Length: 281
Image (tube, rainbow, N blue to C red):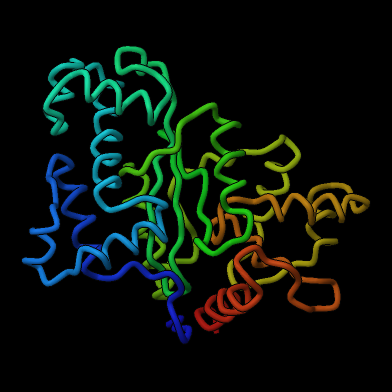
């Protein structure tokens, strides 16, 4: 139902397929020869991963294997077995790579916290989803300004490493987002783990009370919160929301009815509101 003119930063289909294969088998290694056999130019693959992940495809695969190993170690698996199961030919090479990425040796990783990160495709552009074992802690469009700062704040707040990898909550999130954009879902059930101050969390809870397809002003949001004098503080807290769409800050507009600032861009805010109103009426 929601079909913008372009899907910003969309992950090409052939890359989506390869990423899915890595998810299903993290020990699999794609070499340039394997890419060529699929009709994929290795240089094109390298440029895409440099642009979107800040590393080559080969480095991405190595990190993905290390992320999988990290989780196995946290579940109590043996370091030596994990190293060789992850495709490393020596324990020393595994330990060195692991320490370079996570800042700790494999044997000391069990008490470390992790935040899983994944790219998710939507009709309004590609998004980054981040999750802990408690729930989704971030859902942002990849072209949002200050995204790198958000990642750093998130990692610092949760005292955790952000790693590329799968998380059970991602499957629920992706299914519910598809249903939302197809006009088949008006409420989300995926568990959330928002990161912020107690005041910010209270503001975000009010956001979730705004009925699907409706819009509130910042003043009304402050009134529901219990203090009409906190309009500016409420607006600032809305701007700090890291879980777009599910915590619907797009449903808050100016008192004069104008569409005010939105981290994902005003055009996306308009599209989301149009989508919800179209479903209702």
